[in-house]
Image (cartoon, rainbow over all chains, first blue to last red):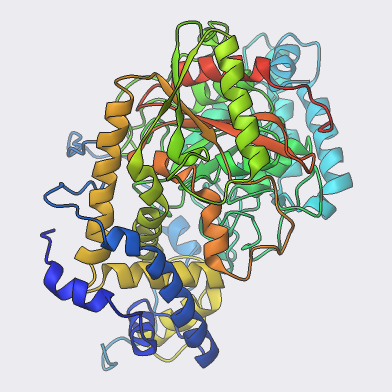
Length: 111
Length: 483
């Protein structure tokens, strides 16, 4: 989580572009209509503009806080315990077969 | 009748839990068509559970401190075999295989769930208008929003559909609707209440808490749901709070700071309405009259809370909501390949506000922007923690308004996301630093609708907060136009 301002500050002087919105939607596995892309380009730009006060801030060498509590690993003894029933869980899935989740083909599709 | 009086009447056998539940179900039947507080009313299960409470009393067993008390549960908390939707189409048809820890605990204490309440989809919103099942209306004025995202839980208590309810608060989603509906709403210290079975929005911010009409009921419910839970790795390893025993201690000698940046002071956040600021100042005067010392204090970084939150929360949401992909639960929209199926499912299943936040979060976490947005917002959290710590070296608690205005009209702020987001400007800082905060009704605004004021304290200061909240409640102007 090192501060690498050079790249980001350059990018932040411009508003988010339509192409970036299309790219981010692909990353998030959302398909947006042309009208939605236009709407989000404007709205995300406005929201990020509001975050300019954070951009302008000199945070120096302040450590980041990702979590309000000091986090430590929580361990438990490695003992067998009852778990949720597999068939019950699969009964809630859109499709299941032979004790497994069933999905459409994956191989051969573009990443 | 308060939840505590109900419980003692049921425990003593003076009242039947079944009758209590039937009374509330009848009210729901009569009026929830208009209010839309519930996504699902679990009438049969509620009657069955109430009968079990009556049977326990008859057999001489104690059904618990909340015996027979009707409780409403926000529909983002898992309930075994009972549909849990997050007010989203993407969870259509899903019935959780287990109960959230809080649901187990209220049930074990004798409370009876009457239904699952409406919310802004995945708890993203401040008005309960972003629901796939239509908006909830404010029972005090049905042309107004109940606040959000826990608007259904607030409306359920305000309309007497339930004595108590549970909500979740990621940026103000318990406190702001409590303020809008004239209720007490508490966001406990992060880690004080188990999040096991709460469907995640912003994992470092989310916290479950109680809605009620009075401070004493709020304290009693938090005593029941609080305390360590091994199923939540962020749960604080300590027993539940003792709160009900401190309520009558008063504020004599307590030091309370008016947080300038969030209370209409110079250089603070803008957009606070004058009636809300006036009620906050009157609350301060009332605390002073009750024996507290009131001073003005400053937490400069509090003004950065909104910006930091709208980077951190969407970032965490975009990650948490990646699990909704049509594979394991809920909706699937068929397509020739898995990738296309996932995209089609998410596109059809999520509403506009959820998509907006997923987009924002994905962008804030993406290559080249991570350090400038998310990374910097995390540093702002550190600054806030340090500034709050130095203020709490001189005062016990802080006082601010809960929300900038009273409940606004339905449809008033749906066009522009930023106008909705600023609703949370006073509540967000507590989530970013993980501290507890409570909203207590204190008078009404120029429109006759309730105003909530907020007490903030350092981590695990719940007993002090409840002590002061009880004093504030006692000093609040009469019910007036509210009931």
